Image (cartoon, rainbow, N blue to C red; front, top):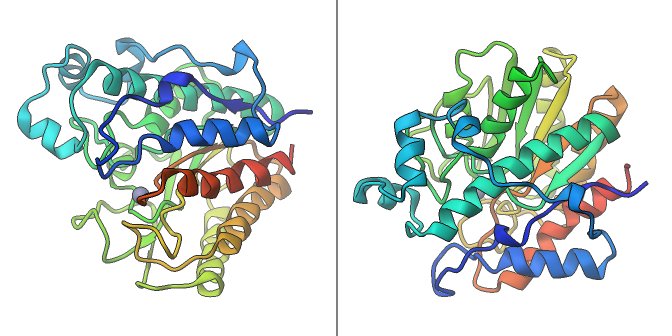
Length: 300
Ligand SMILES: [Zn+2]
């Protein structure tokens, strides 16, 4: 069986290559996944862009309308940190629908990956930190509306805290949010997840994996789950430009393996999303992201 990898060419929008957000990593990632014969050409794995109806399940309808009409205020645009262009907004719509499609495939096959997503800073009423729409939140709300999944776990291992996701699900007892993140990093005002694991600067593979195993054991107590979302951001890497942790490529591989194995042992479907990864060489970042797909492919 082939690992379902959700992808769309519009995951990559035009953006000035000098921008701090390494947009071209999505193109390099696509190439790298094709080269490794992981990404297959199958229209069933290409999402349609999320529409307003879907987006307003997780976001303020007024915010969604402004984003779709490209009439966000300067303050809103500044907070997102990406220019307001048709492509940037469409890209966020594709990513959100892609995460939902990955979830549907995970419910069928046990495991599936979206080659975008992880926009965990986007809140109900605004975007933030390169995140326009919170793709995981949009997917969760759609799954709840379809009654496709009731109890859902979100494991966020991006180096930044999942503040937007935590805020959106703060009152939802059926959605458990877990965030492992560098304590001193953005966002500086964090929103409490159901389980937060703040990590010290410079933490390496061994200590990180101990913290991860502990968090997974704690999360077990709230299960069983109908579905798990996993944000596999690679900004935990020692050479990441925005991270503060010191994981190696091997550490990231062990992390991804641990999360996927944990889900498999529990017989719970898992859908992973890309998350962050920053640096001056987008092709190197893309190679780090490939690790998650390789580890998922071993477990299909
Ligand atoms: Zn991040």
